Amino acid sequence: MKKLTFHRYKMNRLVSVRQLSSVHYFAEVRDYETPVHSHSTWEFVYCDKGHITVWDDVRRIELGAGEIAFHQSGMPHHIHVGKAQTTMLLVSFACTNECMKLFSRKHFEVNAEQRAIINLMVRELENAFELNEGKLQLGESHPSASAPAGAEQLVCGHLEWLLISCIRSGVDRPAQDSVSAEQLQQALETRIMTALKGYVHDHLGEPITIEDLARHVHYSRTYITVQFKAATGMSLMDYVEQQRMERARALLTQGNSTVTQIAESLGYSSLQYFSRRFHKVVGCAPSRYASVARREGLPS
Image (cartoon, rainbow, N blue to C red):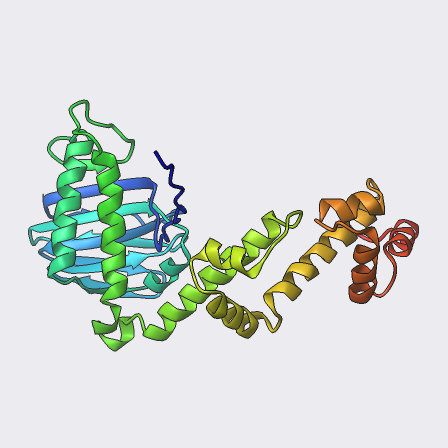
């Protein structure tokens, strides 16, 4: 029997939610108000029916049925519900993906798909966690002993689905709250640049090719070379060499390794070639740089 080898494709993740900070779901609430507060996570306030007034540091937002507002981490805000019977969902969650900046100070009306996603998320939250007097108030997590398999994972999955759906439909929102195609492209390019630079930083001691980098971010070599040049003004391989030389300078300044050891640790098979490249980039031989660095106390 022939054994087949398949390349494993690493799936891109636009948003990734793995932690909830708090969840407050009120099926029927009136005369409710929070103190002014802020926290280190993102939060959204969703009004399913009734009316909610939300204040942040610069805005007063009136949310009607089917409307949602987002607060980025660190933003002071508070929420008020008056006499009208209101159904409200507040979710605080940790998400550090670059695209979250698109939600900064956003409020808008959700569409039918997003309303359905929110309903699914509430149902799964009720499956996953114990209710407090009939209300879902996840201040301190109390997982339900009878939770069906994968309930917590589905909560995160529905939240990620909601965020992606909001991003996809952003161009249909009012102008003041729209997420433009240009903003989406900028967020994508920033994510790609971060991923490329991270890969280079983590693999300086190994051979790095354009193919390796393209495979890492799942884009063509032509696309990443053009985008990287436009974003940084240098080619990818020039950047790789620049970072290797920066690492070499730091190691030479520390004085704990020989020039030969440093060359080998950075993937150079030839000491002579490393020395030539170092001289071309830095302007002097590695041994002289190390001598001057030690004598003048250059920072590593």
